[in-house]
Amino acid sequence: MPNMMDRHDAPERPCRTNMKISDIDAFAAVVRCQTLSQAAAELGMTQPAITRRVQNLEEALGVTLLDRNTKPPRPTDIGRRVFEQCRAILREVDALRELTAGEQPPAGEFRIGLTQGLGELMLPALIAELAAQWPALATQVTTAWGGMLVERVARRELDAALVFLAREMVLPAQVEGERLLATRLVAVGRKGDWPRRSYRLADCHARGWVLNPDGCGFRAGLRRALDAQRLPMPVTLDTYGRDLQLQSVANGFGIGLMPLPLVEGSPLRDALDIVPLADFKPQIDLWLLRRHDAARFDAPLAAVAEHARTAFALPEQAHGKAA
Image (cartoon, rainbow, N blue to C red; front, side, top):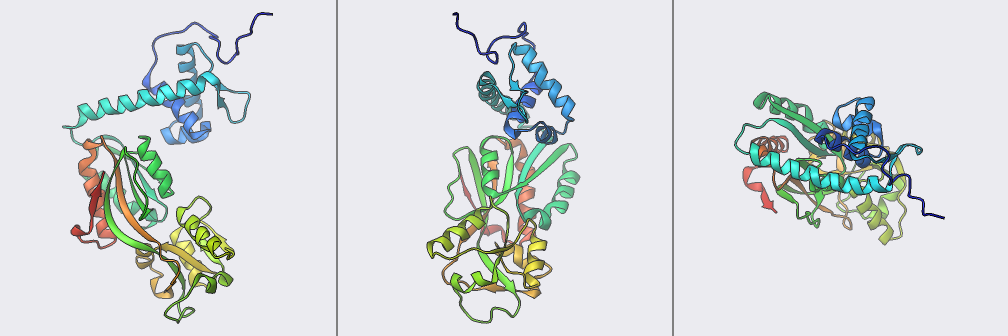
């Protein structure tokens, strides 16, 4: 019996040559985001529009890139190989745009990420400032965990990110960084509940923890520290949002875990106490990360750094750079 070619790898229609970058971008977004709805949201398009672009690329290549029998659609075998090539093409397109745009005023998409918690403190004013100084700049903001934002800058899915990272973290080779602040992660409790000068993790677990959901690097660090002492980690509130977490802590609902600057900048600061833990003192840094080839965004990135310094009252000399 003759070998049957996998239907997903077989050309299903005549191959055309008029591929468009926008179609390549759409297909890459669908694979990266794993759903049409998320890809459409990322690109600011409707689902029918992004579906049509993927179909355009399939027609241009003469193959089926997505298996539409699965929910959500998954890339076929050839689709996965095409995706890797599309990523390489998009990287080269970005590099070409940077080459020609270096001497022009900042314009076009400016994709920046903020770590969880920073958005509540500085996002509205930051967007307004960027829009006022560079009207042609289309700022797109993503909030996510710090580690995820580092990966997205390295993959060129973001131009820059403002993140809190563990002191020991090493940046990927594709990412440049400016350290804006050296600080620490603190446990925080209701005012008056923690009068002693020193506590240990074993003193805390009975109160329960108010934490970010799973995926947060700081939560993972606490888990490792508790596991090392064979202590439980009862979570009384598992939620996003600095203000909601700190209000819950102020109401006595548990112990929070947060970068010190976010606690100090909270309107609830006077209702809270830092819990001095002798056996859990994580050191963290506030970084402004950027792609190596994002020179056309030098001025907006300088404004982001200055905005962060103002938000945290940081002196200019507090920062350092790393590549």
